[in-house]
Length: 140
Image (tube, rainbow, N blue to C red; front, side, top):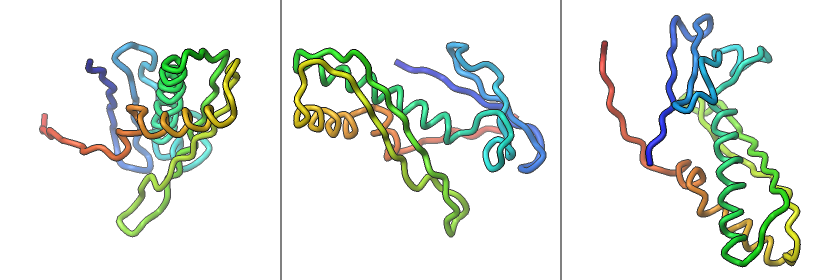
């Protein structure tokens, strides 16, 4: 399986602007830029998109882990809080905190914690955050 996301940027860092889209069309030409990333201007930013990707992946992966135990969630609500920090080399995502609340009939608190931790380690987007990144760069 392969899925694509794309972005187009025009201009310099502070006054330039970009648009981000997904292959499915769920996002189509959504605006992003310096002000949406570092100020309070409406629009999206890469950290918010990573947070949404991790939260949605986590919730789906947890449902898999529960299913392996014969359980089914009424609801899994996941929020990923992504922190972008100034570091020596510029900026970096320095941490991500997952806040998960779930309603799962028949599960014990101990089993829930086990599934939650296993999901954190095995969710594909969690694994991505430490994955090798390859690059093909071309000039037009």
